[in-house]
Image (cartoon, rainbow, N blue to C red; front, side, top):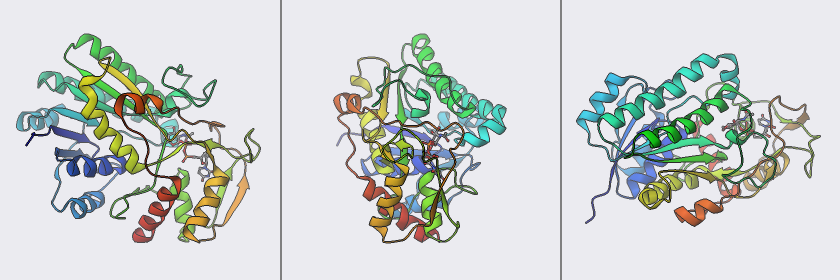
Length: 338
Ligand code: UD1
């Protein structure tokens, strides 16, 4: 039997980290999770345990804490790191930029430093399509230039990609892959793990499911006068399990990459408007959603969706699940949450 790599997942108790942990364990990898619980708790760890049939190996700690990292890396011989741990609220980042710069950049720097010290040479980073801003042409591919980030959150994604770009030049052993997620939605089909927004959800799908569950009165569609088929914004919604599987594909191919720092879009390649998503949610679940058309949300981009062909070509990965699956799974998870 081939021994699979030992992989550290930072932010492993969060939405995408938890789904990715399940996929790695199911593929036979030895997985260690860390999280500081600043934006999560142990709910998803319990869900992971139910899915995989054993307790995930977990340590509570802050990814900026070098002593914590040093001890962890001394006790575990990791082959690779998947770095999810970061703050991700656009609004919060506008109100508290220093908190975002300190956390999102500080954790990357501390992690890379610790990896260098302990000779761990493979990292996959959770980036975002937010790095593109409103691209000049869509579908957008990885060669599109960065536009000025709309928020400090977006700036941290751009800067972390730059940190990796610079570090692979300085550290000749390091290999890096940044995965630019479009809009991850949905939940595990088991309905044992899913998204757990804190307070009023900023993102569309959790707001939709909470409205359907009666926790919110109505959904406001932000903007109906955009230059799109029905006037609402267009995004590329990708099932979180597809996103999770892309990390496994990326790690399996990291040593076959043409460059030591490669970037991939993770999307379906299909643009869906807010109103189309709302309609699809009602079709799939049979629940009537209370919604109204409202003003535009400041900072929103009119239309963006991925050209995911590089990931297909070099990682052998493409999405398998549909928006219908994601909405059905998100709704089942919401019903479990209550
Ligand atoms: C947002 C962030 C993006 C981040 C991503 C993480 C902004 C401007 N962008 O992307 O940087 O990487 O989350 O998940 O916040 N909508 C409504 N009503 C709602 C909520 C959303 O109509 O109550 C619309 C939005 O206007 C948008 C679409 O739904 O057109 C998707 O919104 P959202 O889920 O917040 O994702 P993004 O804005 O694409």
